[in-house]
Figure 1 (cartoon, rainbow, N blue to C red):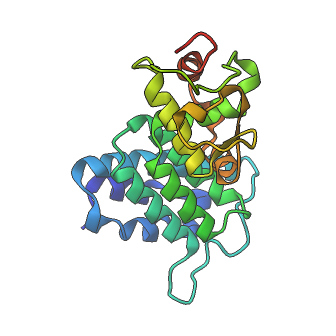
Figure 2 (tube, rainbow, N blue to C red):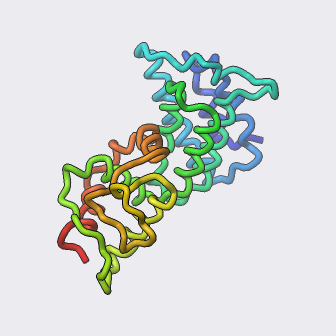
Length: 232
């Protein structure tokens, strides 16, 4: 049976969303929702559903490419996407990420360029990224607003406890093809050159779908300070 919070959220959503099977989507989720996981999934679902409804009522058009229509197996791409995303939110330890996971659901409802395969890929990648990596991605998109180190870290013997994990997460983003450093190969954290960092490939898609420009400015500034010219 579906846990109370998510069930109540599903039945409370009406208006323009009634025709796209929100209740049917959530009815598939009850078997794997834990109590705490239910709370996280409910918060994401309610936030996304309310925003989608507000945007539709304001005149924005939901995608019309069949994303909400049942396929041969009886399930729509929208159902699969919602289930996948809420599963990820159920298991998400960092609650600071949840609003941006919700943004993914909202944007996918309107963006016909994101097919089911891309939605699954984006959710899978977003699920394994840390909150700080989301901040690093936003920093890459807005780097001209910050003073960042212009050299790499090759030849540097020691790293502060604050800098080391940030560099490691930058290198991880590169290894997953989400950022690059001006075309230079990054074999490890010492190859990171902050001033050259930029989004690429799915990194750009994630940045757009998650609306990472909405991340709190102080959180971006902390990362920018770590990657600044005076940190070592």
